[in-house]
Amino acid sequence: MADSKENTLKRRLEFSEQKRGLLQKRLSSFSVEEDTTLWSFVDLITLLLILFILFYSHAITRKATAKSDAAVPLQASETQTQDASLEQLRRQVMQTVSSEDRKDFAVRWDQKRLVMVMGEKIAFDVGDANLLSDIQPALKQIAGFISSQKGYKVAVAGHTDDVPISTRQFPTNWELSAIRAVNVAKFLIGHGVHPRRVSIEGYSAYRPLQPNSNPQNRQANRRVEITLVKD
Image 1 (cartoon, helix red, strand yellow):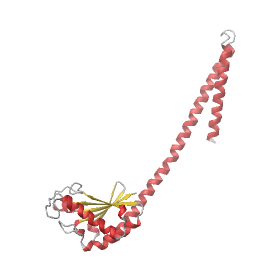
Image 2: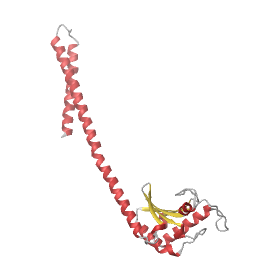
Image 3: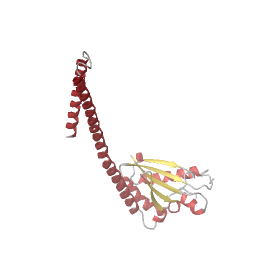
């Protein structure tokens, strides 16, 4: 219906322009004194031409506005659907961890990415990178959960506090954070997560959750994060 009105206005606009051109050619051979009525008619045609231009512009503007307004509900719907999916994902992750381990296991969002955080207390001895036996059942459940999320890649990142370490196995915190991430990744892969989906990162003390200003904050910063990244 809108397109029909728009086409009609367009045809009238073209016709008025043609009519005005013909009249101007006729008038070129006359003086104003010879035919003032004809000149008045030209003025009328000009006014009609302006009126049709205004109608046509208004029709185009309304059409563009209608298209823009129609896109807004779709974008809002997509955002709501995404948020609902992420919330469902968070609930499923928390169900894989026992109630005893939840105090040292957290789930948070980072730019719409689901991040599972394992504190050092439940995963490693201080200064060591071998996984503790107590965390392995929960980590096995997490591996099963990740395996079911086919649309995601998995980034495993190790983090430490700012207290320097210097042992034969770990000369710096870089090695400690990286090897912890490697061992968590190897465990996930050994329990069903495809190696192609997994990447490993070691950040040492340079991405803390809290300022390294007291023992509690330092303990919170010693962690491994498992991030699901939309593929």
